[in-house]
Amino acid sequence: MTRLIRYAVAQPQQALLHTRDTHLIAQLLQQAGIAFEQWPLRPLPADADSAAVLSAYQAEIERLQAANGYRSADVVRLRPDHPDRASLRQKFLDEHTHSDDEVRFFAEGSGAFYLHLGDEVLQLLCEAGDLISVPAGTKHWFDMGPQPLFTAIRLFVSPEGWVGHFTGDPIAAAIPRLDADSPLNAA
Image (cartoon, rainbow, N blue to C red; front, top):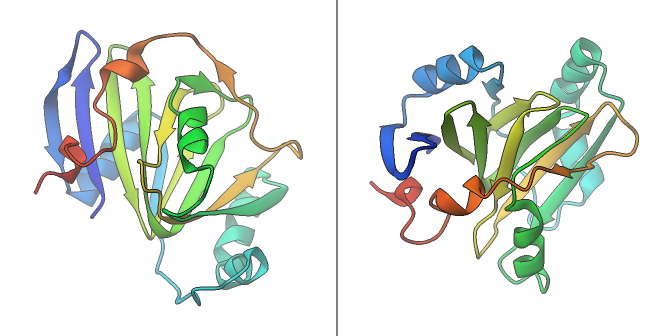
């Protein structure tokens, strides 16, 4: 289930808010300029390739492309047995920005986005059916966990796709990660 935890940068280990209320989550994200939607899920075969995943959500992708000028879409699919899962996880754990929006729709599985907004960090566990659009220039990072299990559609304005500009801020190491004992996994 989608979850959001709010932390103060000054006290990064103490949660100020923990909610599963998707209406509240959408409202808090909207106030920060972050788009959040939930799409109906479509069944995907276990061996679905990128073309099949994109085809399943073609109408939604085309709607976002028309509304926001996104020119390309691709699919990232990671499983717990991926041989490079640890290095792929590490790649996204440091705070960064992009000159393009970061748009992700989770067709399967989950992953956590961390949004550094002024003096707070919002930790959002995105689940299957969730779409998040982080505007260009927003400080953030992503954690797929030590055993990644997700299929995500990514949309880009720039044909170069994902290019991160790392901030060097140590805040990402201070906020709890998506591990077995993570507050995101609390009941």
